[in-house]
Length: 223
Ligand code: MG
Image (cartoon, rainbow, N blue to C red; front, side, top):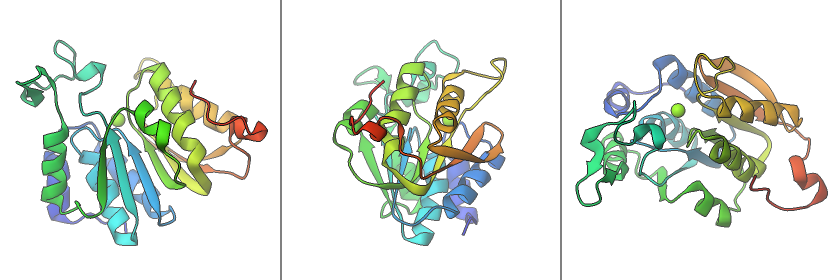
């Protein structure tokens, strides 16, 4: 179930993005342990991790939704470390990753399994109401947005569902802190327990403990 065909692996490898092979393998293994249903990825970029998740989703009959505004994070903008000039749209002068992501999904043959949502996570959170069996948080890594994405979408995970968080660096010398703060928040609340670690990828599982302010029925927290 966690196997990726050579054809899809070459498509994923060719897609620009930031996902080491061992973390990609761990992500597929985690997905294979999730119940079939609706899976959600936050942060599509050019679709590299979407191929890994989507391949497992297809195998078990899940649908994968992947959300991205497709204009890149701060670190992808001109003048920043992770900028790729080939992804700039001459019409807008801005980074534009949607065409590349669509090519990736086409080449991987996953267009029937993956639904791309082109919107900010704040927009998407305003209408999202479906239960989620697998959530991969890999969007904007500012503290504000990382915390927002966790609070807005992790609350929709069913008991036993899988939460994967990427770019988790407990040591600030290794990378930014917000995803680590999200993991600390999730485990500290009792609503999640840690299952495994591979590189900067953390796999958690939803417990029976109510999600934060759901305890009081206060509705979504957008902090
Ligand atoms: Mg990432």
